[in-house]
Length: 136
Length: 146
Image (cartoon, rainbow over all chains, first blue to last red; front, side):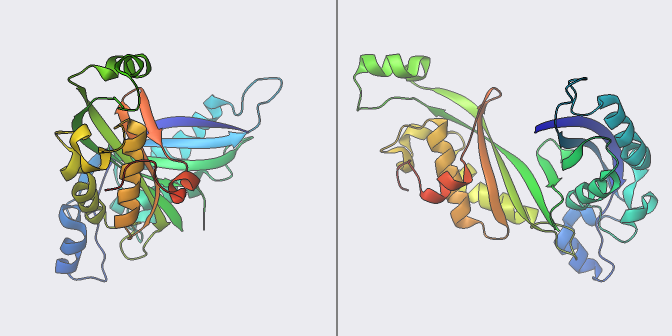
């Protein structure tokens, strides 16, 4: 089995706020991320797929197709958007880096032709990232 | 759902690789320029990955400031801008990045309990990094005790 990783970038804004909590509780839990006007990041997405090398093409997966799937399912929806207000899954879900990794997994699962999704890693910044491997 | 959170930390320190168990000539042969008598330094990077269920209320695996505070207290405040050879933990162990990684891994596993410590990687330079296999860290440490 070979693992293959493709990177992509998107820029988006978000904020953290739990409606079930008071303002003080939100500020205590989320600090400056609770500013409801939002703030933004340049995110880097790493999508890793697993599969066998095709004996004819020598590929695990056609990189162009993988790039197109990532672009269609994720980048075109997330890039230059406010995640809380404009991306459906985050209307009711906190757009933390952890939840973004899980949401991207759900968007990509079963859509990569010829390979199995192995992990999704999302960098919010160079020193902070979250990863989801499809575990329950 | 189980997810993972990775965080990178930076510190700078000096060290000299030398062991009294070998002659000066043998030390030079084994450690090369890392054995130069007055030591040298690196900008180290620690990459900590923690794992656990995503909390339904916060959307997070763990409280990031708590992880930051733990790494700062257990590692950065001890090691940043110091000479590693003079640290108590390296009294009887050579401060190679292997031994440094073992020491940092052990300190964090002992001190951080909000989520599972999945891995601790220490980068000595951009081309050099060290990580302990989970089974190896469970078995104990090769570095000197603190």
